[in-house]
Every structure is written in C-alpha cells, then in structure tokens.
Image (cartoon, helix red, strand yellow):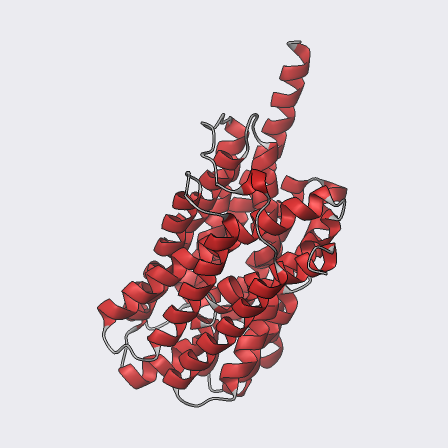
Length: 388
C-alpha cells in the first residue's frame, strides 16, 4: 500500500508539515505570548528566529555532501530531532539555550526538506505522477494551519511548545509507517559535482536571497504586529491559520503558472504579489488589510520557494544539485539577515513599518532580477545553439 504514489505523496506531506510547517514556522504564533512572559525584546526575538535559519543553512549545505546511511534514516532521524527540539523549547528559559535549540531545529528542517523530497519526489517522477508533488509541498501550509489552530486554543507559551512537539512526533510516526525504505541504488547520498554557473544563475541566486529577506520579516512578526494593534488584535488566533490555508494550494497554483509563463516570469509575478502583501501588512492595519496580507504572504512564499528551486535547474548545465544547494544557501542568508534587521529596527523606531517597507523594496528588486535572469537565460540558450 505504501508504494502507491498517492500514499507516498501523503507521506511527504506529513514530513513537510512536521519539519517545516511546524518545526520552522510555529515560532510565529508562539512568539507574542513568549515575548510577554519572558520580557524579550524584538531584537532578541529576531535573534532566536535567525538562529533557526542559520541552522537551516548549515543543514542544507551538509545535506549536499556524502553522508553515511540511508536517506530514510536521515529523514526519520531529522523528524525525531525536530520533535525533541520543539518540546525542549518549553523547558528553556535562557536566550543561549533558545538559540541552540532553534539552530538544531533549523538543521532538522533542512534535512527533512531535502531527504523527504529525495525519497518522495524521485519516486513520483519514476511512477509518472510528478503532478502529486504539489501534495508533498502542501504539507508546509497544512502544518502551519494545524499548528496555529492548536496553539490558538492554548494560553501558556510552554504548553504551546509541548503541544507542537507532540504534534510533530505524531506526524513523524506516520511518516515512518507510510514512506518505505531506500532502494539499493539510493543507499548513500552522493556528493554533488562542481557547479557550472552562469550570469542567469547569479541573477536568480541574488533574487532568491532578496526573496528570503523580503518574506521572512512579515512571516516572523505578523502575529506580533496583530497583537500590538488594538484595532485588529482580535484576529490574532486567525491570522497565522490564514497564512497556512493560503500556502497549502499555492505550489500547485504557481507551478501551473510557471508552466504557462515560464518559471522565472512566474517567480517575478509571485514576488510582486508578495510585495503587495507585505506593504499592506503595515500600511493598511484593518481587519480586511491584515487578512489580505496573510493571504498574499501564504499564497506566495512556498510557491516562490519551489519556483526558485526549479529555476536553479534551468539556469545552468550539468548536475543541478550544486546549484540547488547554492540558491538554498542564498535564500537562507536572506532569512538570517531579515529578522535580525527587523528586530533591531523595531527596538530603535518602535515600529516594524520601516523594515517591512525595506522588505517590499527587496521583493520588487527580486522580481526585476528574475526577469533579467530569464532574459539572460534565453541569450545563453541562443548562444549555445548558434555555437554548435
């Protein structure tokens, strides 16, 4: 039964829900009560968020080299570490321990993404069911929505972390039951070959870094922004659920638009939509405005993530894994800088408006660079044809 493509896709969905949707993003709805209880500053909250993204960067780079053991073992181990780190956050009380736990959880999230995709997406492609990859990526939005709904019913920040860890553990157990072991040819993760880069790839990698910076400020602080605004504070339990519900179908939507327009043009379009959402979050602080911002954020960030990885395959030649690792590193760098910058800017100005508008500019520039990357890729392809 577990060999059926749909069951494999569901296994991938559960892995992504546990490792990314919960493991990386449950911090956002837990952040406001945690900040209030521990008297954390916005800069400290940003540091904790960035520790997770530094771990994600480290995990992405490590996963690109040769590792002993099977991909399934690494996936299940990563899901276990993720659940432990989530629950342990409820026991922590000091900033250094928070940083260590979120760093480890970030590494586990990166491993979950890479190894679940390697196990599930490769097999879906061999079965001729690549269309089910959207089910796999929908786990991120599903995990965000489910964990946000769960913590919304809880009052204590420690209990929120414990419940999130338990939810991630249950999902990990289900993955172990659904996703089968590696085939003989998949026993070891091989080292990627040296990348063959191009100007088109450089433009895309820069755009991907700007996207990471542009989305993560709102993704980290949107719930805190709602709590701090009396006119929309009643929406706090719902705003992050809205982000998750919008994210669940977004990869399928943007992948379809990518097939119609081209991957890099679709990336540019999604970046502009997200820029509008980020701008709305600070310029239109009304119930309609913040819900629209949540929909635009959720409806684009996973689509942009997937489109960027697809674009990395197109903007170069040879083995694409090194290019994928490099754009992931670029994306992670943007994510690391964003919360730190926003946190310190808030402590200085008392508002997230300025860093959010800087994020808008970054997303618009990302869209422009994606269009430039598309034009450069076409020139490179034409030059390659004419030289034959």
